[in-house]
Image (cartoon, rainbow, N blue to C red):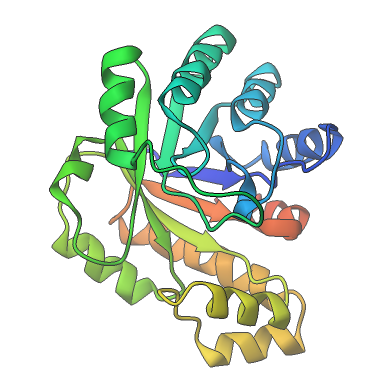
Length: 248
């Protein structure tokens, strides 16, 4: 079985794909596919479908993230039609972070997005996110699952052991770019527990976050418990590629 590395791309907040192309070109040496967030952390970004199309144009495989927060049913159908026209056929459906401006729509849920996509555009590969808690029965209808970011290999393995499913599951791994990044993340997402020892290592050594994430990726691979990893390199994608190119 191939252990897949799915790398997340930082989507552009301006109408310029140069930085996206650089991430794809760099990480393409180690990544099997790319996940493109949708209006990342509540800010407006270039369409995830458009960026996934760019990934495909550069010879990669793109997974477009679509959130229920920003779209009604008509807008969702538009996105599915656009994706079909562009040849994008893989999606991760999520709820969406709190927006920095505007309001959240309540027209769709992740569950209804999966049901609608199955009926409206059969043939797409659809994924959902899983938290480090009991897995709702309806999420088992997804074609793959992304387990939320975690910093404890033991906790990830315990979750996987207690949640057997018949679809691929990808464990979430994130690079901590700095002490500030770590503490902001911990404050914003209560479910994420970051060991204080790791935060102190990152504060003392700017490469510590990269090393910890890459070690976690390799440990997850060696465990055989997951089908792959969803890796979020943030701004450190060059360092991540350099480290993993010789070990994966």
